[in-house]
Image (cartoon, rainbow, N blue to C red; front, side, top):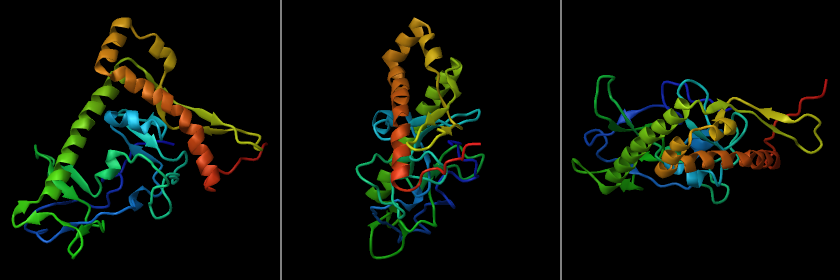
Length: 256
């Protein structure tokens, strides 16, 4: 249900090109009220700073694998996002994860040996390009405030990613992550729908964590993040209900 992206390119990105004033001198950034890259994406990466806001809208889980990633579940089934329409327009007042808001930009190393990250973009996106509409990315050879602002946003996202990695490492250190499972009973359907394929914090193990460790987590704010994750799991049924309302629910399996 919630696996981390395995492609060579990050989730959403079809290609990556480094942004520079020589080749993109006349490029402009266009605004939009639609996010087509979110259509059909049921799980979007989150940073820990986003937990307080995201937990009001989505279940927060962790991907499977050796390096778990926090994910906002925007749908419970692959290919389903109940928070955007078919064109990517938000359905109501919904929090959009920073991972999605930075698109089509991204900080990346141009070569495996490079120590510094460079601002890149997805050239397949229609949000950037030459034309009359939009905010210029360059003024001569100098980056405009638009470009500087996006660079700063991407840098902040990378820093948040490091803090998120430290948070997950702390959970793993204390063996708090377990394979998750949730069963949802739909009216009129005999068998419940069982969702797996994600990780979650084990509440039983959490209660066994030493008091001095918990005090440290409380002082650092980590404990509040853990509870934001746990509280958000109640939204699984809300997301399931939205799938049913939108005709995107899973097909019941007939009883044997």
